[in-house]
Amino acid sequence: MKTIVWDVDDVLNDLMGNWLEQQWLPRNPGCPIGYAALTENPPHRVLGVSREAYLESLDDFRLARMADLNPVPEVRAWFEQQGHKFRHVVLTAVPVGTAHLSAGWVLRHFGEWIRSFHFVPSPRKDDPPFHYDQSKGEFLRWLGRGDILVDDQPANLAAAADLGLGGILFPRPWNDGSESIPALLERLSLQA
Image 1 (spheres, rainbow, N blue to C red):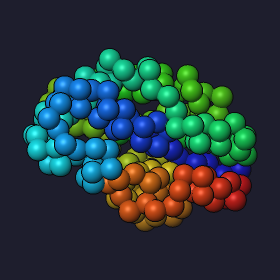
Image 2 (cartoon, one colour):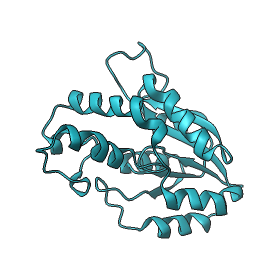
Image 3 (cartoon, helix red, strand yellow):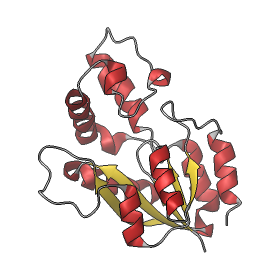
Image 4 (cartoon, rainbow, N blue to C red):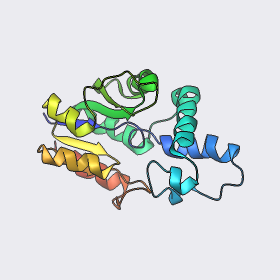
């Protein structure tokens, strides 16, 4: 049975889109940027703010609204139909201070299939003074498990490929993913 390694934010859920619509735009009504214009992740330069201001806003949103996020409907339906054919692992990059919220969200929505949650800290100024791994690639090398990585960041897929894992790029405005979500999930089904 193959093991799929899933990213959480912007793959299992739509964190960036929800943050933009529910927090950033209401608090910045003059902002002319829509979701499709977020051609970089992190999007601070596109939004014309500092990285710190963006991260503070995103972290505030995670703390206040993470529990309210819904899964990407197509992904949730795929798990219901195909999830039993694979093992599933989560590997996400989140701040240490909000990782528990992400883990709780994953277990609440996907715990029937996903039994292993891992994270690489997304750096913040109040982080512990040490890190085991600086990237998802380093973590995957240490883990030594997994067959396919599903992620929205091409650099993570490249690192996984260097380790012999297959990769599926989840389409978002900041990457070149042109495949539709249903098409990529169908391709994933064929890997069983």
